[in-house]
Structure formats: C-alpha cells, structure tokens
Image 1 (cartoon, helix red, strand yellow):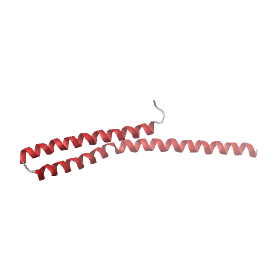
Image 2 (tube, rainbow, N blue to C red):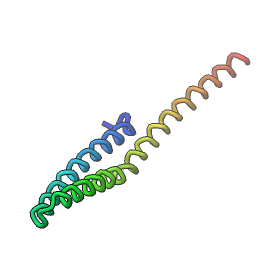
Image 3 (tube, helix red, strand yellow):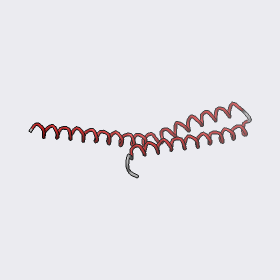
Image 4 (cartoon, rainbow, N blue to C red):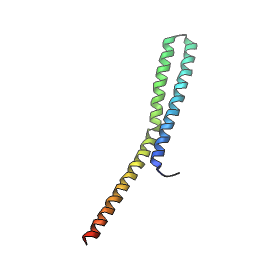
Length: 99
C-alpha cells in the first residue's frame, strides 16, 4: 500500500486534475446556458463558455501542481537514495579488496 508512494501521489494528482477539469467544464456549460437564456445572445454564450472553460482548467491545474510536485520530490529522493546506497556499497567493496 505504501510502496512507491511518490508515483501514487502523482497518479492521484493527475486523477484529481481531470475530475476537477470535467466539473469546471460542465459548470461552464451550465453558466453559459444560463447566460444564453438571460441575454439571448450566442456571443455571450460562447464568451462565458470559453472563459469558464479556460479558467476552470487553469484552476484545476494550479490546485494539483503542488501535490504532483511533492510526489515528484519523493520519487526523485528515493531514486537518489538508491544511487547513494549503491555507490556506498561499491566504495565499501573496493575498500575491502584493496586491504
């Protein structure tokens, strides 16, 4: 369950992004439809739809970027620790053979 946690955090961040983006796009359609009913102008409908969609996707991205970055940080730290352990082991093996 807690193995490879960095990759799991990144996967959760991606899933949350897509869920939020879909919700914001659906909300943009609802508000655009309401604007079309209120104004009877197709230009206002398109404007509300485009602005709502763009802002929604931007908000979705910003809301998960720190979570994704944290997962990336964990993954890179784990990989660096594995490399350091292998270097340490190689160094100890070379020291033993030289003695």
